[in-house]
Length: 155
Image 1: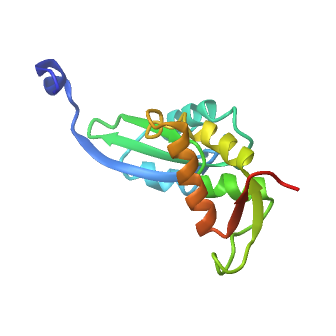
Image 2 (image 1 turned 135 degrees about the vertical axis):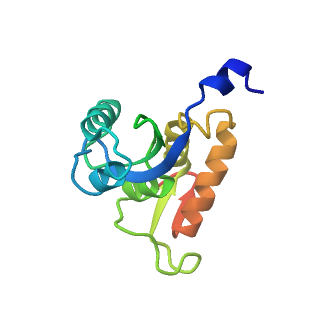
């Protein structure tokens, strides 16, 4: 339950904006500029904050960002780590998954790769309370649906 003080100080939300921006590559140009500009948000402040928060990732890593725009032209944002499919394709060394998952195998990964991806994803806000085993099972499911075969050990 929210306290009375939290309710009284809550700012009215103008919009929730979801974008995928390359790590360290937020610029006032599209797609960031038009998305934030229509709510009169400070583009340069967002770009500086976002680039500072994502500097530990390699450049051009696609980062999912959720921006909450308030009616007083202020904003808050949360950055999620790259998608599981991006990690899977990167570790498998492929550009895209199988055109016929379940029939054609695009690549193979070991359980060690899955575990490493799960450890990275565990830091995401929506995964932080999930057991590592559950995250691994979810990643294996995603791997299967992209045509990546998961084996105990690579030969």
